[in-house]
Image 1 (cartoon, rainbow, N blue to C red):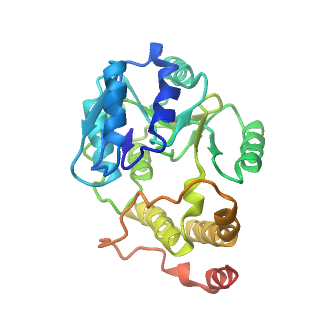
Image 2 (cartoon, one colour; image 1 turned 120 degrees about the vertical axis):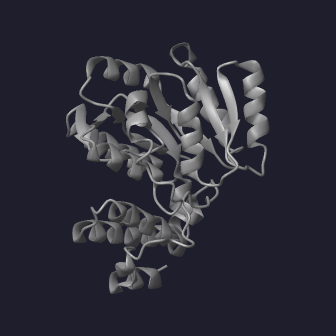
Length: 285
């Protein structure tokens, strides 16, 4: 679990994991230069629960904190969540059961819901409907780092291929590195988590950098396309439209982006983000 200034969410995240601790070998939290009480909270839990381990990674960036945690983990299966993730009942069992049964997959993810968001209920209904309309186990090309597990052998196979760039989405980059080696990722219905809705509070101009990083990551692997560009622009337009109301209705606080947008080393960004569709949506804020 990479963590930077996560004192508001850390206790709930650890509590949800510890409910299932009998099948968890260790819970590794990697503090990535937090300026709040994150490390203090984790250290307190570590004193009470020996399975909780606090590591520190001084190099700023989710990818560096992830690598430190993955490299330190000693189990044959490595789970990966964010500090605002709350795993649901049966999460650990679903992961271990899947890997025991399906030797043809090396990584797995599952449905993601929201909490502390005014859109949590309709979003849950949308996710539940999507889950009902697809197989309970299916292949996916990429998985989100807030609900992810990987075989240690697969991590070791791609460790040297993953990028250290902090302007990319490290979870997408890892997924695409697995794909290039023919290693498959599954999505399974029982592997459910809830995450904070704070990303929906990101101001649209800042959220644009988040979307650009998505495009930049696929472009880094030579997989960017016009279809992806249109999809990401649609995502930004939708975010821009609902952001004013979300800001009024939300009880949580906004969150800095988990990716850097300064000094990006590629020109394959989402330059089309300035098109008329975005400009029109921005004027309606």
